[in-house]
Image (spheres, rainbow, N blue to C red):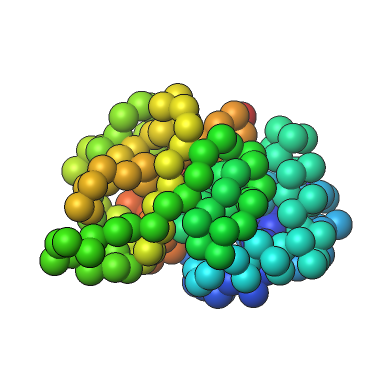
Length: 206
């Protein structure tokens, strides 16, 4: 029997792009805003673009925050992408919102007032792998992925950091804990390398 894979719909954009990327690697993912579908899934993908504040509010209004926590604690594979990577932490400076608290840490804004770097950080950038993970079997330090973000994740514990990226400062671009893995960059916009992580997610046994 085929596994049920659900992409969380909380009005945070790019859902069809993520779904098409899933289809490309043979994942028949459905899009749903229903907490019951999240809890019934075998695997969940938690993507997102836009404002963390409005995203957190929508998650709470739909009961998706509770469903995501319950899904995580069931131990099934959970993949966060971009905004989904930030919201799994405890707190975001964007709108000063408490988040899902699945991983200890906060999300901070890039502050380059005294420098020439632009915010948001947009475009291709390298990752430096700092520890191995099953989803990174086809990824090496120096590989490039596509980023669009004004805030960056700061996990409390180094054990949760799987990759770093340089943009004016070194920030965590991939984090994980137990059955959760998350990327700050957009897998669905990162070509072959992004698809390689999705493909590994399809087979990941936590």
